Amino acid sequence: MEIRLDPLFLMGCDSPVSADFHARPLRSLRISVTDRCNLRCGYCMPEKEYVWLPKSDLLDFDEITRLTRVFASLGVSRLRLTGGEPLLRRGLPTLIRQLKGIEGISDLALTTNALLLADAAESLLEAGLSRLTVSLDSLDPATYERLAGQPRLDQALAGIAAARALGFPVKLNTVVLAGENDHEVPALLDYARSVGAELRLIEYMDVGGATRWTMNAVVERAAILERIVASHGPLEAESGRGSAPAERFRLADGTRFGVIASTTAPFCGSCDRARVTADGKLFLCLYAREGHDLRTILRSGDDEALRAAVAGIWGARTDRGAEERLALGRRTPLALAGELREDPHLEMHTRGG
Image (cartoon, rainbow, N blue to C red):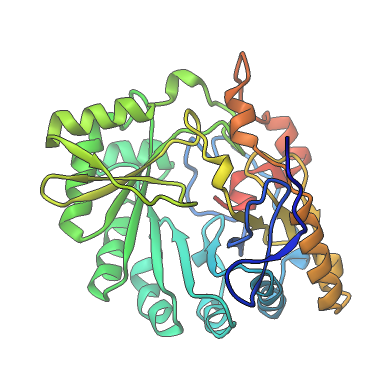
């Protein structure tokens, strides 16, 4: 029997935290600042043409800051800026400075492909960014070009090097694809260790723009771990995962890495993440077909109405999308190319990863 909690309840102190239908707190917010990207990764953007959000619909920095302040008042403490490629958004350090000053936000991160990071890293650090997650799917120039659609591996590695030289904590995200880059897992683990970053190995997800997804292309968690044991020896699972998407492991030499197994081992029960698109639509799950329009309320200027709307939407949240996908007898891509052209909000690069 499900127990329905009030959308607002107290967790140990005087700070109200919004809880959903399954008592999952609202702790983490991911805001996309652009739907544009300068790569065309096959697992995310494999099509030749895309429908972009109108620029007039995009939230400006003051609107993003107001929205974040509302979410923080409902319990959000972790904020991540995403895209598309967020470094394509002009003036991003200005936004980071505004967000850094919001009471309750203790962790401010950014996800990037690092192509523009070498030039941007210092200004991001000075603005107050806490940490970086970099998408890196191969260390081989030919494989990188095939997967990302452009021959820009050197730029990505230069961006990572620049960030680490400044002291940025960095995590590396690799989508592991059968027959494409799965043989590179040991090398990627060694590279991450060499630059002082933590590698996250991700199962290929049937979500967003993954119009060519098949289960045959997924390298499952067990196979990823077997490959690492074969190359690097025994590993130990770490405890205390909490709501984190990655299950973390430690090698005998102390090297840590994570596996995000959303496709075959969903963690919906602990998911505390909300996502807002660059034009102000709130999504409660990566697999959600519909979002909630916050831009209209935001542009009315009524922050109390916005707060009530967000609390109500989260309080009614029942989404367990990855679990529902796993239960399907025959699994196919979440959306086809035609559906994505009709509704670009279904795209992963629009709603943020």
